[in-house]
Amino acid sequence: MSTVSLGGDGPHVSSFGLGCMSMSGMYGPSDRAESIATIHAALEAGITLLDTGDFYGSGHNELLIREALHGRARERVVLSVKFGALRDPASGWSGTDTRPAAMKNFLAYSLQRLGVDCIDIYRPARLDPQVPIEDTIGAMAEMVKAGYVRHIGLSEVGVDTLRRAVAVHPICDLQIEYSLISRGI
View (cartoon, rainbow, N blue to C red):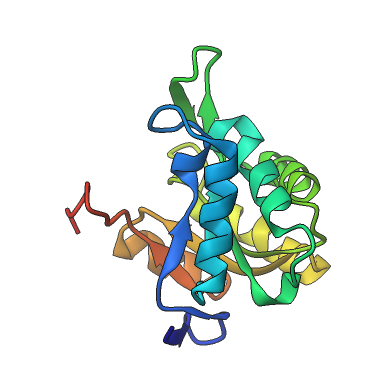
């Protein structure tokens, strides 16, 4: 599997990553054993980048990844985690929260569910219209300095937001949905 470096100082990862969202019922029922087998097969094929979100299955996805990685070399996997998407009791989407205090709360839970001391790439799931991106990235930069996050990424933002974020702290990558289902880049 070929590899690439993300950003100027980002991690070295496989050219293909494995998005794990569908493994936690986001598109319908999923099978635990099949999901874990898929993660194992991806790792054996040379994929090093696993993408998740703390809201995938309300934390289920992070617990699933923790189980799949048990007994495997942590340093051979790059974990990319999105945060901040809010859900209501009916599992519908109810907004985004990227306030610094909320980000730190989401991070603490993700670290615990994943069973790790540090997340490789941490990113807000979407732009929060109530919080300046500079505030979110500034707080995330504090988490990098504290050793809880290695790199900061972004998801689904435009070039102006990216420029404002980079002015605060280096951004290793920008995640934009592109799949067999969504080709609208």
